[in-house]
Length: 449
Ligand code: UD1
Ligand code: MG
Image (cartoon, rainbow, N blue to C red; front, top):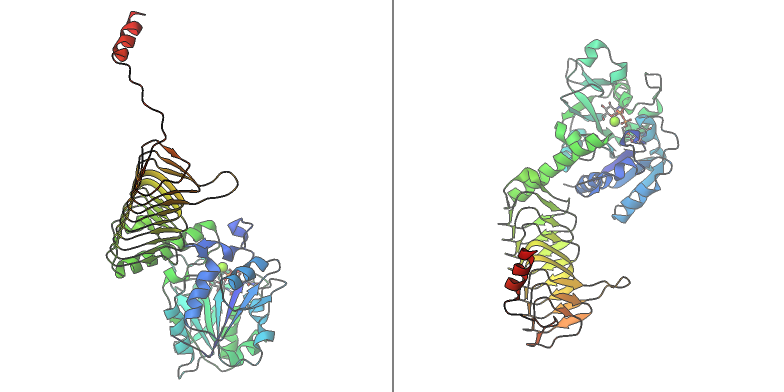
């Protein structure tokens, strides 16, 4: 989907006051990653030559996050936030002489798809050679959006901001999403002519449409879907964006051959990988870094992050798989079992009420109910190794570092502090004392009182 003669300017200098947050708005996550990274991921699919990121003062954290995620952007600081037109002007120095297409995107509108961007660029480079292609949409509630004023010939004549619009103009259904594809040869000539003589006293980028028309160039609209154009200005809108993205991820998982019994209750991360013939029950949450192979069954109410699950394993209900969990083929991880930084080899079972942390569990080992790997002594974490085919009795505490050999058994209720040889039995509980008839005697005594 390469559009190589393209540069993108991403506007993200806004303060995001309505988020009421110490975190810059564009770093708030959707589907487990910062919204600016969601936008850059979509943008990268069209392979722009340059990405210019416009940030405000004190927003270094945004630049750091973008670089840490591996995007190569050129960051420019907009010292005073004088409007979207002024923000685009900030890119002039780094983009001077650039003659390709220039895409303008908003960092807080992260759901735009690569297909839509490609459509806009195709129209921009088409034979009509429009100076500006504006992504329009028909919002359910158009109130605060700029309105697209289309002339008799179908040309986009100008954009009027809601605050500056007449009654008639406000009745226009088609609105400005903010996303534009602009002819780079004329962009900065147009922004140089912007004035702040308007209701907000800002330099509006939207005015470049009227200015382009005055210069004898045409402008046009590509229409997009409202769902793609959700802008995030508040926590409520962040939740809307999350819902839209989750629906996309659910649909993709189902298209790839997974069954979601109740899709709306399954939450994915941006990078969740789900194989074929995977069945996911209701109320399952996937944090970042999860790969689920084919034929796996994930029963209801599981929380899974940073985990790899091999073919045909069964997980849950009510399992918690934490970062570093590596679950082998046909292994079973049952209810109220927590696994962290541990490999559970093929066919092993931990079906009930256990904590397996910093451990290696061999193939076909059986981990009894209530088994705990005591991996932390308050200072360091240590490893537990359980051999293939070992049988760990219920309620065993494995005090790490410790190894249980292949085929060994630990007795129920044991506290294992020393290594257990292969095929040995280790029991550490105290011996049982039985006093015949004592229970009946005790009851009789109590009854008398
Ligand atoms: C803008 C459009 C409006 C459109 C709407 C869609 C203008 C003048 N208006 O209005 O037609 O319907 O988006 O959501 O463009 N920003 C900066 N520096 C600034 C000002 C803004 O970087 O000085 C960034 C913001 O961080 C944000 C984006 O530009 O990402 C849009 O700014 P915002 O103030 O939200 O514009 P709107 O008033 O919503
Ligand atoms: Mg806005």
